[in-house]
Image (cartoon, rainbow, N blue to C red; front, side, top):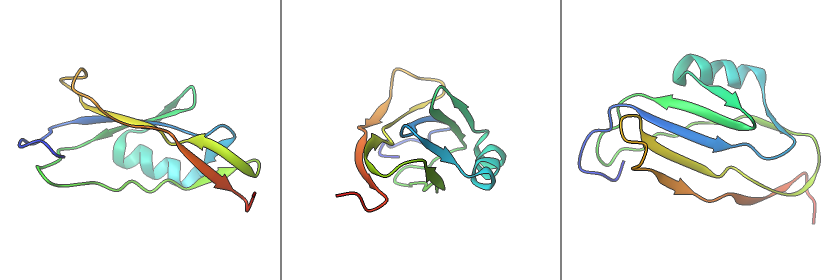
Length: 100
């Protein structure tokens, strides 16, 4: 949270890479802690209050169906009450399974 105020409730959307799935135990933990859902390849999380200057790490246990270079894990987040005030992180190039 880079803002000077507490973010009461934040929604985070994370684009899962093509061919990637969340391990069942990881998904259940995300559902229990963040009311997670997956919609059309996007993981949606609902975070509780986040104080100024604080961060929250969310581990994702992903399994990949193929090796190679793929793009994914782009994300955007916004206060639930102000979706127009979003922050975005572009997708990354990921090397999976030792591909060159």
